Image (cartoon, rainbow over all chains, first blue to last red; front, side, top):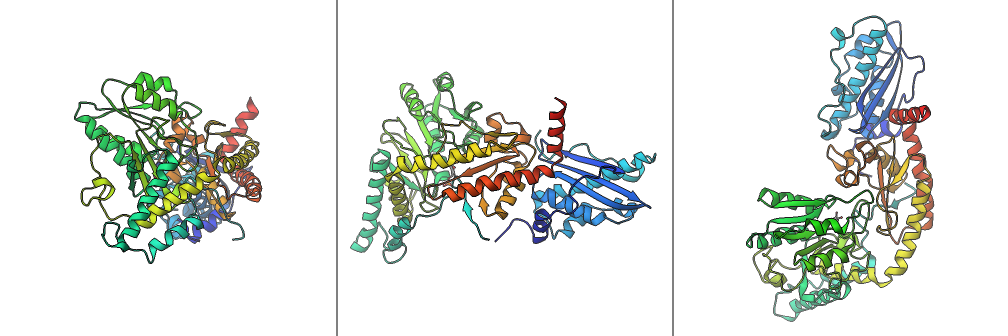
Length: 145
Length: 395
Ligand SMILES: Cc1ncc(COP(=O)(O)O)c(C=O)c1O
């Protein structure tokens, strides 16, 4: 049957990878808000400079769940420096595209990863700002409230 | 897919096979133009005359008060804009409506606002029903029109139409009702309810898409919609959609045949779904529990988002709808849910199921079984739900 999403998106939505929490995470990041209708929370475990494990929890639409899932897949096992380079565009490409009005979900996924990495750096006593820059508090311009 | 349950009858309905059967001749052999003099054309003309009479009988109006349109949106636009145009000549440029009308009405009103009309939107309160006192208070010397929907398409609430009609009549103000969700589902008496203009649409009661009607009480002055030939008493020109006209009239006749009995059975199923789904923690029914369309169920579940809920239900073979921003295609959740005071985050998690006479008890069982599973699955991955539970624990 027809779908508004690509097969890849539907696959990641139907069987999201890496859902859950990491109790003793080395970094946790949360972006979005309930009013706008999407929140993403990412947990990372770092070992030897690599993302040893990553888990997510997402409140949001189908593409929010699928982009979270894909973003975690793209950084799992990768060196931190590489994870830092993850762009929303890469997530969208890996999902074979998203409808135009859903692109903000991929931006949120990128920000969620960055927020988790920023938290990791902060815990290590490293100022994340020069490395990551500012992460917007809310999904600005996402809704009229 | 092993199951397919269509629970989105407020969006559109399945064409009844009996209706199709009545339409078939006019889609095949009887293709004559109703305006043609020869017998072959007059066959079509007769079918249209009979359809008009049948609709008039069903709604208790006169056949020459029925004007066929392409659907509900066209009827709404015509009614509102053309009455406004006429009334503006008398200096009347104030219109009263409600905050939760269909966009066909609200956007028409916005267009009139641009032209200098003043619009008063009555509140619909937490249960989704207007207070007639608010209407009384809102009517002014320069009120040109009152347009209030018969029943809401999202939360199903039914408005006190007869009382509204009486108030409008007493104040000599025209009254239009968007009855797109009510026609074929509720008894309607055009005269007794003092309705001046009524919009309806065929595809909401097992008729075809692309056909509707505006009922306009005789004696009302209003502008033409389409200039051209003499169809629809010169008001809306264009060769008639004979098959559609035959279809909408047959669908209405069939819908009203056993209406009370049908509704009793649908209401029973609706109430079973509502009471079972409200057992899910942190859920709420949107719209009044009793004064609502027989087939309408609208429930919000905290901590989850509507679009993902619909997609998981779709995978289980259930077609439903939601008022979340993601499904409305805009940035905000449905204006209907906001109008009854739902906070954004709860409006995002709404589910609308609209059942029909063909919904079986097995379908109801399956819905009751599936929805909690999907809600649970989404809550397990929702950081918002985690927060809600955490705060609950603190209390
Ligand atoms: C209350 C209401 N008014 C108007 C319409 C528009 O009707 P149509 O789709 O026939 O233009 C709808 C249907 O979506 C409706 O539910």
